[in-house]
Image 1 (cartoon, rainbow, N blue to C red):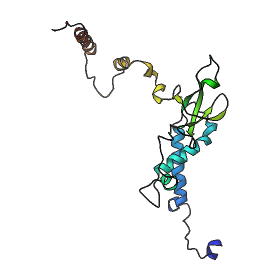
Image 2 (image 1 turned 90 degrees about the horizontal axis):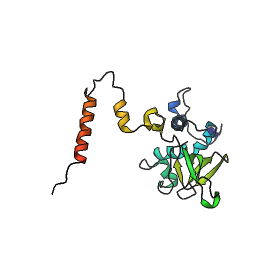
Image 3 (image 1 turned 90 degrees about the vertical axis):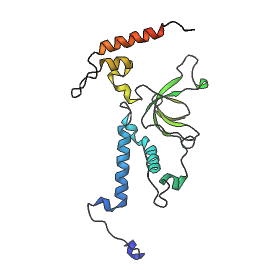
Length: 205
């Protein structure tokens, strides 16, 4: 046995007790971190691109995990130095984005952006992102992206497209809490009268 021949002191981990093995615990931490990232992707994100999200998952986990040599530093800072978010920004994984097309690469009357999926930062490029382009089905490093349709989870709510006043006035009252004001329409009409009076009051000299 190699360890015995080299006179290396070791101890075996009890079977099925994964918490005793630091490698097993690290694997569990990464699995939980990566699954959480997969649950936060856009609902239309193509799941066959899951492996494209691994570099950012490893990056963010090492930024959050402390170094064993120096607990005051992260694991990433211990090996690569302090991560500069201004130099290399990070976005949520699997976000639908619009990639800006430069005037030299698009037609005169063509759209100024194309659809894509953000899959990670471009570590070797200044303030750039790595995006999977749907049209070409390939990766592209770009410097200007915009949140695409349904990029924000609030857009999935049916009433999110209504103005705030419509949402507040038509929100169903809670079954456990009484209504704060039974004369809702009267209060609204009174407030409107106040606003109308304030808007058209004569100027004072």
